[in-house]
Image (cartoon, rainbow, N blue to C red; front, side, top):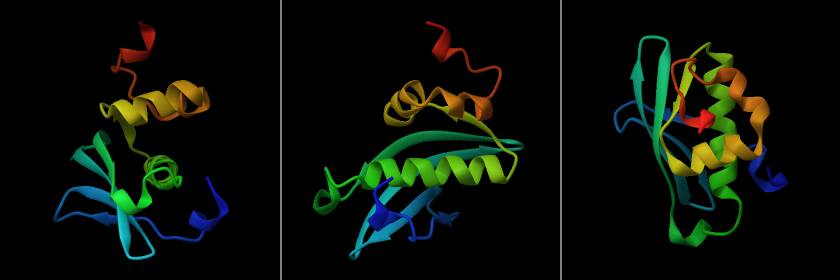
Length: 104
C-alpha cells in the first residue's frame, strides 16, 4: 500500500453494503454481501480522480485486514480482489474453504 493511504480509515458502510476509504474527498470502495461468518466481495471501484494512484489496492488491503481481524471468511467474487489474492497468495488463509476459484 502506498504510504499516503496507510493512515486512512476503512469505513464499513452498512447502509450501502460497501467498504470505503476517502482520499482527498474522493472514494474508493468495495461492494460486499455479508452472511453469518462470511463476507463476499463483489465489486471494487474508485472514483476517476483516484484511478492509477493505488486507491484500489489500499481499499482491498484494508478490507482484507478487516475480514481477518473480525474472523470472517472471504468469498472473493470481485475480479480485482481475486487477482490481488493470486498475486498475494498469503491472503488465501482467509478465503472460505468452499470457494474453489483458485484451483483452476
